Image (cartoon, rainbow, N blue to C red; front, side, top):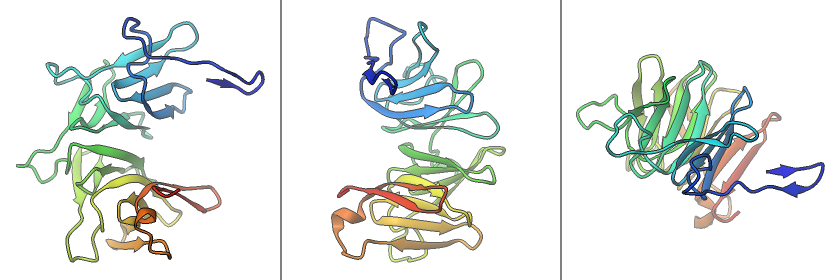
Length: 232
């Protein structure tokens, strides 16, 4: 934690012997709730900062408990407009919904249910202006979730079909003023317009393969796009 006034930097290391420390030293995601609560996604689970002198509350994966966090590797965190906290996990951890009692409802792929999540490796989360949740996966494409029905609709990469995702690996998601969904993927910067179901792929002019591997996208208040790629 950095204090701009004193320029002092305070560390909060993971300590296996201290249950009030963060569960893992590899910090993948920091998320600040609208109410000021800080959530920390690590490679060993999820943590909530409880305030000065009270440390963190850990939320860990327990293979013997189906209502624990679905996986260890937390990649994204989202609080939606209805107050629900969603947690994305890699390595088969799926999409996790935190319940009021501290347990989780874990959404995983069910091969017999076409309305289940497309893949259990989840990378990115976004709530759009209509309240739908968009989920980027590591190989299964982009999923759209209606939180009210808890049904998923998968948008996949279909070979030789230009009106589909060019890549099923979606690392980042944002929404523009026209409600178009933008995705950072291994194929480049992609967009999807929900109103007509159209896709578009936007690749760098220089054609660099490394530059095509987009890992993050952010649209600022002025409508400018900020894109992070393997090459910079």
